[in-house]
Length: 211
Image 1 (tube, rainbow, N blue to C red):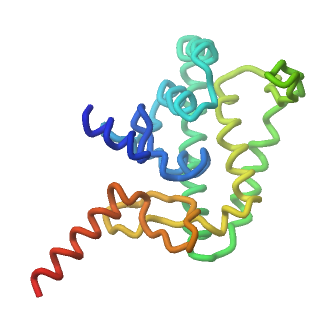
Image 2 (cartoon, rainbow, N blue to C red; image 1 turned 180 degrees about the vertical axis):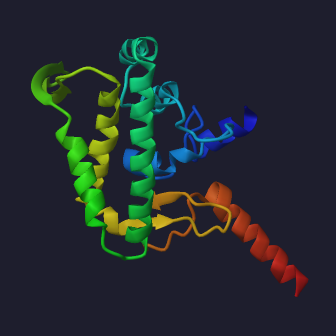
Image 3 (tube, rainbow, N blue to C red; image 1 turned 90 degrees about the horizontal axis):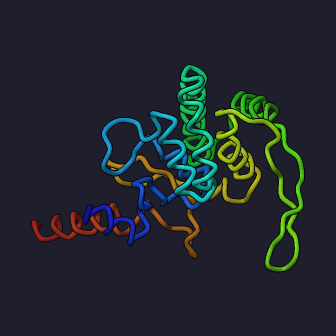
Protein backbone atom coordinates (compact mmCIF):
# COMPACT_ATOMS: atom_id res chain seq x y z
CA UNK A 1 0.00 0.00 0.00
CA UNK A 2 2.87 2.37 0.80
CA UNK A 3 4.42 1.84 -2.63
CA UNK A 4 1.06 2.35 -4.32
CA UNK A 5 0.58 5.61 -2.43
CA UNK A 6 4.07 6.76 -3.39
CA UNK A 7 3.50 5.99 -7.08
CA UNK A 8 0.10 7.68 -6.96
CA UNK A 9 1.66 10.77 -5.40
CA UNK A 10 4.24 10.82 -8.18
CA UNK A 11 1.48 10.59 -10.79
CA UNK A 12 2.57 7.20 -12.12
CA UNK A 13 -0.65 5.39 -11.16
CA UNK A 14 -3.96 6.41 -9.66
CA UNK A 15 -5.41 5.19 -6.37
CA UNK A 16 -6.73 2.05 -8.09
CA UNK A 17 -3.34 1.08 -9.47
CA UNK A 18 -4.01 1.96 -13.12
CA UNK A 19 -1.12 3.71 -14.87
CA UNK A 20 -1.74 7.38 -15.60
CA UNK A 21 1.47 8.33 -17.40
CA UNK A 22 -0.24 8.28 -20.80
CA UNK A 23 -1.53 11.82 -20.62
CA UNK A 24 -5.12 11.02 -21.60
CA UNK A 25 -7.72 8.26 -21.27
CA UNK A 26 -6.97 6.60 -24.61
CA UNK A 27 -3.27 6.09 -23.89
CA UNK A 28 -3.90 5.10 -20.27
CA UNK A 29 -6.33 2.52 -21.64
CA UNK A 30 -3.60 1.20 -23.94
CA UNK A 31 -1.41 0.78 -20.84
CA UNK A 32 -4.18 -0.95 -18.87
CA UNK A 33 -2.98 -4.48 -19.56
CA UNK A 34 -0.77 -3.74 -16.56
CA UNK A 35 -2.14 -2.71 -13.18
CA UNK A 36 0.06 -2.10 -10.18
CA UNK A 37 -0.43 -4.73 -7.49
CA UNK A 38 -2.33 -7.15 -9.74
CA UNK A 39 -1.14 -10.24 -11.55
CA UNK A 40 -2.56 -10.79 -15.00
CA UNK A 41 -4.51 -8.40 -17.19
CA UNK A 42 -5.58 -5.14 -15.63
CA UNK A 43 -8.93 -5.29 -17.42
CA UNK A 44 -9.90 -8.91 -17.09
CA UNK A 45 -13.44 -8.52 -15.73
CA UNK A 46 -16.28 -6.04 -16.13
CA UNK A 47 -15.85 -4.96 -12.51
CA UNK A 48 -12.31 -3.87 -13.36
CA UNK A 49 -13.57 -1.87 -16.33
CA UNK A 50 -16.02 -0.12 -14.02
CA UNK A 51 -13.17 0.67 -11.62
CA UNK A 52 -11.01 1.93 -14.48
CA UNK A 53 -13.72 4.25 -15.78
CA UNK A 54 -14.50 5.58 -12.30
CA UNK A 55 -10.81 6.21 -11.60
CA UNK A 56 -10.49 8.11 -14.90
CA UNK A 57 -13.52 10.27 -14.15
CA UNK A 58 -15.82 8.78 -16.79
CA UNK A 59 -18.29 7.04 -14.48
CA UNK A 60 -20.01 7.95 -11.24
CA UNK A 61 -20.52 5.45 -8.45
CA UNK A 62 -24.30 5.47 -9.00
CA UNK A 63 -23.84 4.75 -12.70
CA UNK A 64 -21.40 1.93 -11.96
CA UNK A 65 -23.91 0.33 -9.61
CA UNK A 66 -26.52 0.21 -12.37
CA UNK A 67 -24.12 -1.70 -14.63
CA UNK A 68 -23.45 -4.37 -12.01
CA UNK A 69 -26.86 -5.93 -12.69
CA UNK A 70 -25.65 -7.10 -16.11
CA UNK A 71 -23.13 -9.34 -14.39
CA UNK A 72 -26.06 -11.36 -13.02
CA UNK A 73 -28.57 -10.89 -15.83
CA UNK A 74 -26.28 -11.58 -18.78
CA UNK A 75 -22.74 -12.67 -17.85
CA UNK A 76 -22.05 -13.89 -21.40
CA UNK A 77 -22.82 -10.44 -22.76
CA UNK A 78 -20.43 -8.92 -20.23
CA UNK A 79 -17.71 -11.40 -21.16
CA UNK A 80 -18.16 -10.59 -24.86
CA UNK A 81 -17.89 -6.87 -24.07
CA UNK A 82 -14.59 -7.45 -22.31
CA UNK A 83 -13.30 -9.61 -25.17
CA UNK A 84 -14.12 -6.78 -27.58
CA UNK A 85 -12.39 -4.28 -25.32
CA UNK A 86 -9.18 -6.30 -25.04
CA UNK A 87 -9.16 -7.00 -28.78
CA UNK A 88 -9.42 -3.30 -29.56
CA UNK A 89 -6.76 -2.52 -26.97
CA UNK A 90 -4.36 -4.92 -28.70
CA UNK A 91 -5.07 -3.27 -32.04
CA UNK A 92 -4.70 0.20 -30.54
CA UNK A 93 -1.37 -0.79 -28.98
CA UNK A 94 -0.15 -1.89 -32.40
CA UNK A 95 -1.30 1.45 -33.81
CA UNK A 96 0.58 3.34 -31.08
CA UNK A 97 3.69 1.37 -31.94
CA UNK A 98 3.31 2.43 -35.56
CA UNK A 99 2.68 6.07 -34.65
CA UNK A 100 5.60 6.26 -32.21
CA UNK A 101 7.91 5.11 -35.01
CA UNK A 102 6.52 7.56 -37.53
CA UNK A 103 4.61 4.96 -39.54
CA UNK A 104 1.12 5.50 -40.99
CA UNK A 105 -1.89 4.12 -39.15
CA UNK A 106 -3.30 0.81 -40.34
CA UNK A 107 -6.52 1.71 -42.20
CA UNK A 108 -8.13 -1.53 -41.07
CA UNK A 109 -7.90 -0.37 -37.45
CA UNK A 110 -9.66 2.89 -38.35
CA UNK A 111 -12.38 0.92 -40.14
CA UNK A 112 -12.90 -1.37 -37.16
CA UNK A 113 -13.00 1.56 -34.74
CA UNK A 114 -15.56 3.30 -36.97
CA UNK A 115 -17.71 0.16 -36.92
CA UNK A 116 -17.75 0.25 -33.11
CA UNK A 117 -18.45 3.99 -32.98
CA UNK A 118 -21.41 3.44 -35.29
CA UNK A 119 -23.02 1.23 -32.63
CA UNK A 120 -23.25 4.04 -30.06
CA UNK A 121 -26.49 5.99 -30.21
CA UNK A 122 -26.38 9.37 -28.45
CA UNK A 123 -28.63 12.37 -27.92
CA UNK A 124 -27.95 15.94 -26.80
CA UNK A 125 -29.09 17.14 -23.40
CA UNK A 126 -28.96 20.51 -21.64
CA UNK A 127 -27.73 20.15 -18.08
CA UNK A 128 -27.44 22.82 -15.37
CA UNK A 129 -23.98 24.12 -14.53
CA UNK A 130 -22.42 26.87 -12.42
CA UNK A 131 -22.61 29.29 -15.35
CA UNK A 132 -26.08 28.27 -16.51
CA UNK A 133 -26.35 25.22 -18.77
CA UNK A 134 -24.01 22.99 -20.73
CA UNK A 135 -24.82 20.84 -23.74
CA UNK A 136 -23.78 17.22 -23.28
CA UNK A 137 -24.03 14.05 -25.35
CA UNK A 138 -25.78 11.20 -23.55
CA UNK A 139 -26.00 7.54 -24.53
CA UNK A 140 -29.49 6.60 -25.69
CA UNK A 141 -29.21 2.86 -25.09
CA UNK A 142 -28.37 0.65 -22.13
CA UNK A 143 -26.08 -2.35 -21.78
CA UNK A 144 -22.49 -3.22 -20.86
CA UNK A 145 -21.36 -2.36 -24.39
CA UNK A 146 -22.04 1.31 -23.63
CA UNK A 147 -19.13 1.28 -21.19
CA UNK A 148 -16.78 1.19 -24.17
CA UNK A 149 -18.05 4.54 -25.47
CA UNK A 150 -15.82 6.96 -23.50
CA UNK A 151 -12.75 4.88 -24.32
CA UNK A 152 -13.41 4.47 -28.03
CA UNK A 153 -14.48 8.11 -28.30
CA UNK A 154 -11.22 9.30 -26.75
CA UNK A 155 -9.22 7.02 -29.04
CA UNK A 156 -10.92 8.65 -32.03
CA UNK A 157 -10.33 12.15 -30.64
CA UNK A 158 -6.69 11.26 -29.95
CA UNK A 159 -6.16 10.07 -33.53
CA UNK A 160 -7.32 13.38 -34.99
CA UNK A 161 -5.41 15.49 -32.46
CA UNK A 162 -1.87 16.84 -32.63
CA UNK A 163 -0.96 14.47 -29.79
CA UNK A 164 -0.79 11.48 -32.13
CA UNK A 165 2.59 12.54 -33.51
CA UNK A 166 3.86 13.06 -29.96
CA UNK A 167 3.16 9.54 -28.68
CA UNK A 168 6.24 7.67 -27.48
CA UNK A 169 7.05 4.37 -25.80
CA UNK A 170 9.17 4.30 -22.66
CA UNK A 171 12.86 3.88 -23.47
CA UNK A 172 13.40 1.40 -20.64
CA UNK A 173 14.07 -2.17 -21.75
CA UNK A 174 11.84 -3.40 -18.92
CA UNK A 175 8.87 -1.10 -19.60
CA UNK A 176 6.41 -0.99 -22.48
CA UNK A 177 4.19 1.90 -21.39
CA UNK A 178 3.18 4.59 -23.89
CA UNK A 179 2.85 8.30 -23.19
CA UNK A 180 2.19 11.59 -24.97
CA UNK A 181 5.41 13.60 -25.03
CA UNK A 182 4.39 17.07 -23.90
CA UNK A 183 7.86 18.14 -22.76
CA UNK A 184 9.05 21.56 -23.88
CA UNK A 185 12.02 20.29 -25.83
CA UNK A 186 10.29 17.09 -26.98
CA UNK A 187 13.09 14.93 -25.57
CA UNK A 188 11.19 13.02 -22.89
CA UNK A 189 12.24 9.36 -23.03
CA UNK A 190 10.71 7.77 -19.97
CA UNK A 191 7.14 7.04 -18.96
CA UNK A 192 8.03 8.66 -15.62
CA UNK A 193 11.20 10.12 -14.14
CA UNK A 194 10.06 8.76 -10.76
CA UNK A 195 10.41 5.17 -11.94
CA UNK A 196 12.10 4.29 -15.23
CA UNK A 197 13.93 7.59 -15.59
CA UNK A 198 15.38 7.38 -12.10
CA UNK A 199 16.47 3.76 -12.58
CA UNK A 200 18.20 4.70 -15.83
CA UNK A 201 20.09 7.53 -14.12
CA UNK A 202 21.18 5.25 -11.28
CA UNK A 203 22.35 2.54 -13.71
CA UNK A 204 24.26 5.10 -15.78
CA UNK A 205 25.94 6.40 -12.62
CA UNK A 206 26.95 2.92 -11.51
CA UNK A 207 28.41 2.15 -14.94
CA UNK A 208 30.50 5.34 -14.78
CA UNK A 209 31.84 4.28 -11.39
CA UNK A 210 33.00 0.96 -12.83
CA UNK A 211 35.24 2.64 -15.41
